Length: 210
Image (cartoon, rainbow, N blue to C red; front, top):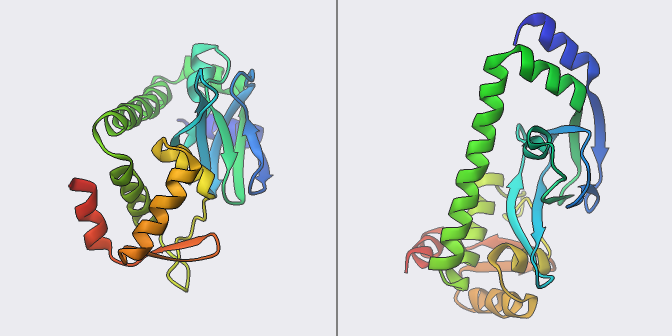
C-alpha cells in the first residue's frame, strides 16, 4: 500500500483489548470490519448440525479475522473467542472495501490470507478423517508447544480447557480427559491443575505418526 493508504488505514483503525474468554464475534454475526491480531490468541470454531462445537483454527499475532465474510458479504461462519488476553486492531468495512478497490496488491494479499485459511481447513479435514483421536491430541500438544512455547516452569504458554482440547481434536470432553490421563501415565506430558507441559517431545512426535 502507498504511504497515503497506510496512513488512512492507520488513522481509521480502532485498538481493542479483548479479555481471555471474551467473544470477538459469533457465527451468524454481520461483521462491519476485520480484526488484525496484534497480541494474544483466538480460537475459531464452528457449530455443527448436531450441536457439537468444532475448533478449526487458532489465530495469533499478525493474522486477520473476518476477512472472508467481509469479502463474500456474508455473515460470519465462525465464532472467535480469546483464549488469552488479546489486543486487536479493528478496521471498518468501508476502509477495507475502498483499499481493495484501489490497491490490487492489497487485494492479492487478502486473497493470499484466504487461500492460507482454506489450506488449513483442508488439513483439518484430512486429520479428522485419517488420524485417530490419540494422534490428533498428540499433534495438538506439539503444535501448542512448538508454536506458542512454554512458561518459566515448562508448561504450555497457552492454557486450554479440557473442553477446548476436546473440541480441537473432535471428541467428547470425557474422552479427552481419559486420554490426557493416559498420556501422563506414559510420561508424554505432565500437568498442574489446568496447565500441561510436554515431557517427551520426540515420543509425542512419534505418536502422531503411528
